[in-house]
Length: 290
Image 1 (cartoon, rainbow, N blue to C red):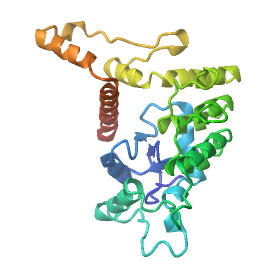
Image 2: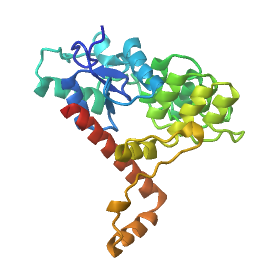
Image 3: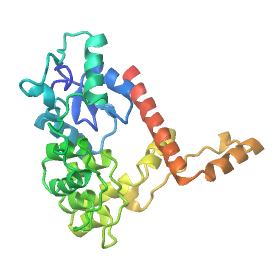
Image 4: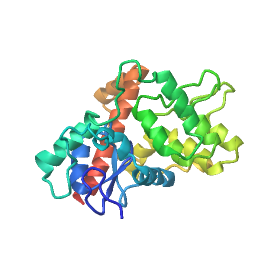
C-alpha cells in the first residue's frame, strides 16, 4: 500500500507534482506553506489531473523519488543523527522542520564530494536529453533536481528533451518536463514543435496533450471563472466567460487595462504566473476545507 513520502503515514491523499511523492494531510499542509515553486500539490481524487500526469507522480513515488530527496539519509555515515519522522511524530516542529530541510533547503540531496566533480549544467542537460527517450523517470527527475535545463537545445541533435520524449511516445516523461518548465512551443532545428514531433511519430494522444499544455494558464483561468474547458481538438483554444453584466467600463478601469497592455513581456509573464498560482491555491484551499 502507498505511504506518505515524508512521514510514512498510510493512505496518502495528496500528490506533489514536482517532487514525485504522495503525501498525507499533515505533511501536505507544510508543502502548501512552501509555495508551488517548491512543491505543487494536488489532491489525488478531488482535483483535475491529466491522465499521464497522475501516472507520472505514482510512478516516481513507487520507483523511489525519495532516493533523490533523501539521498544523504540513506547513505551510511552521512545521516549524522538526522532522522526521518514517523507518522506518530508531531507536525510541529518535527515533521515541519524535516520537510523544510528536505524540500526547501534540499539538505539531503546528493552533493559532489569534491569541487569540480559536479557535472556542468550543459552535461546534465545532455544526459536529460538521452534519458527521456526511455521510461526511466527517476533518472530524469534526478537530473532535473541537479540542475538540468528542461528546454535546453542540444547543440548536436538540434532538439530539446521535450521533442525527444514526444517523438519517443514517453507521456510521463513529457509531463515531468512540463512540470519543470519545459516550453511546449519550442522549435527544433527543423522548425518543429514537440507536438509536431509527436504527430510525426504517430503519437496522436500525446500531440493533443502537448497542444493543450500550450494553453494551460488560460485554460485554468477560464475553468475557474466559468467551469468550462476549451475543446482544443476542435480548434477552440480560448473561452471568454460571459461577464458582460459585471464589466467595469469606467475611465479608471480603461486606464488600468491600458497599463496592463503596456507591460513588458517579462512582467506580464510574471503576472500570469502569479495569477495561475493564486487560482491553484484557491482551488487547493477549496478541496482542503471541503
